[in-house]
Length: 596
Image (cartoon, rainbow, N blue to C red; front, side, top):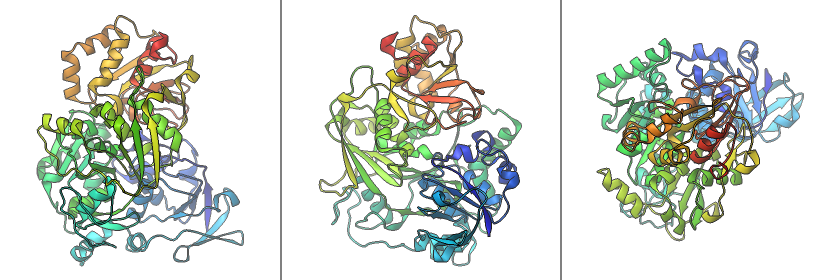
């Protein structure tokens, strides 16, 4: 028997363990801060064998494996929820923490109730009543039974178990055109090629070869520690690894410096491709590495941004990452696909960020959970690569496993300009099967604001007009490209930042910074009173630059507006486009550019 600690819906990873603790050297040092913004006494009161019970979408947010790890380190026996965000779910299984779906439990128990779990039977008992739970798929149960995914790397039959094709289908594919017997979506085609099979279908589990593996300073120090504890540490293909220091650049503390040094030293000793100060990881990857048809794991939830170039990018935790790093492969559950047919053109003053926030509001923060979001249609030709990155990047905020755009001449021209060719063009078959199809007329879009504390809490920007702000942020992997800076600079040219507002402008990469410098954009911002920063994640992840205090309000082009995301748990974050953020920085309150 164990005690229940009860939480509501949409508990995010920032609330489980806040960003400012992620670069602590060990999980034991982090765990005392678990649920700090929701229950300050949780870490002190929870005992080994206790349970966390939650409502829908538990663990939404980032791919930080620290979230399930601190719960396991505190002795939590299992997390039972109505539903889970897909990265948290996978991460928990991979480290050996049971995560169980039970639709009825949350609404029929109280905080502090005693509970018994019969995991193999799929039953939990509380106050004499039994509740049936969803049993794990056999493969995932097997990972739990062996103590987690990494445990398999230290077993004598490591190579044999690693080469199994779990539930793989058979068939033929030419690997270039994606021609198959079963009509398939883009995500399905890429998985089939990576698994070496002719066709796949949603629900299959396949062993896949990875094309690239990206990791940043948010979790790599933990990956290195796990690697060094392996019985036979090895790297399957060093050329596939890309490590990028981008979250806290330059270092903000001795602990961060030590984490960066660990990452830097390992990369040098093992000849890992390494970037430091070059920019935000996803922008660096798109500029230098990603190409169409690739299957990429990134130790960051916004890896789905790579779909802008027709690649299957997905965020994973450091255990998944390490397993792929050591073996060269991993397992994937084939996702269902949501299809978005785009038509028309965005109106003047409306941007791709307004579009994707509108879509997230329409389908909800859990609406694409463990699904692929596929975009195509005539309207695609009216979206630049920067637009496509912004759209794919935010799809994880609807729970998506990946997001992917059809490959067209715009994609191919971008790749050619950057010295790359597609691995394969995997556009969907005309009669591919979709879980749902959405028709989106771009011409109907309006400026949008996502209100605190959820990305799907979207309203027309006009409904937030007049809301006081203390800080504005233009940057991040979602909206820090040259196109976004041009939009902001055009609005602020000849004007001034409001005297009571801090306006942070952070180019997404050194390449973007250099171009903005050459075009005079940075001078325009500085003349207006903005603070121009070096390329990095900055206030978007709330651990270094621009952190906001209690009762302060930030309007941001960052990726999330979770409670405490940008600093104090008593602060407020609104999400909007580069235009709305810049206009608000000038006005001192939320407004749109056309109202200045």
